[in-house]
Length: 429
Ligand SMILES: [Zn+2]
Image (cartoon, rainbow, N blue to C red; front, side, top):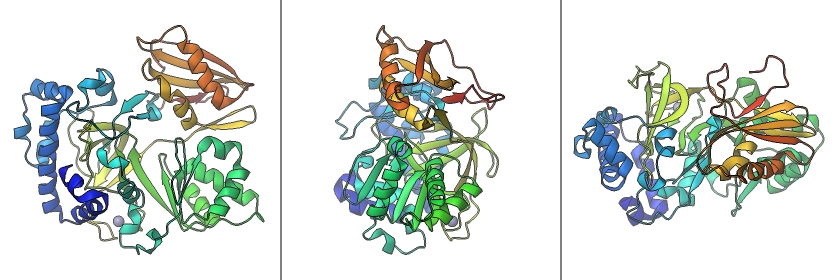
């Protein structure tokens, strides 16, 4: 962090680019140093880490090389949510970043402090457009016009942010805005990009939108969807992997075979059910360590995803490891005239993490949903109606909403609780 403060965002990004190009041996040395710095900071300033380290008898001074990471405990979202917030963040200094929220595919609302760099445009742009730095011309970055269709968004110069809800409820208006904006890069969930492609194919003759670089994230991208998006938008899709708490973890290069890990920012490990590292190429749980977050460190954090890692050099020439992720499917439900993306419910449930441990939205009739809530201690007499009001803004006036509190959310046959289920379809699961 000190280097960042001294250099400022632009030069710091240049420094990160240099780190990424280090040969693996030197990169491991750098990881070891960085890790020591991060763990020492966590031990000194954050109660949760101090206690967890004491429990296993490891001190920050024992963490010196990259392999020492394996000596540290594995953390999950529950490790953080089970404690008062002042025990999991650095309370010794002001943060300069805002609290962020996520519930992701698990439906467990969670607030977290992102890393210091997340507030810097230069850093975010570097993270989001990384594929352009890898063996391709940087020309597209000059005067880049970036359009993003996301759940939460704000406006910035040379960028067009479109809320998913607006896209789904008035595709034509959004499409016209996109054509006018002429993006050179468009970024969204694969399901939304797929919808955009479908809209364009259905409406041949409409003003043409051509986008050279398309970034897909947040959901599994299938081959047919990728082809459809590329044909409609006349560009190339680059898939990206990340989690809200940490940010971008890996990005595809021009070879499109796995996500190259952003090694200057994250260390990725793959472990089995017992938390032991599995050999490269073998499937397991994905853990990520965020090397930039000193506000609320995520060290050996279970992302909730499964996949595998390979260190076999890529045909593109990059030496960084690649990961492949399984799962994370997109889903929509239809309620009346509206098609609703699962992440819109995530957005609606954002404000309730103080008293919602977990939730699931089930469609139980053509115009009926049930919000199943595992409630926490702050759940009061107005909580159910507050939740109903927030969901109402998503589903509209003519859908019945029931709010139900339960001790736990039933597990689906896929083994993961889903935040959105359609129980009106026979055999759904
Ligand atoms: Zn590559």
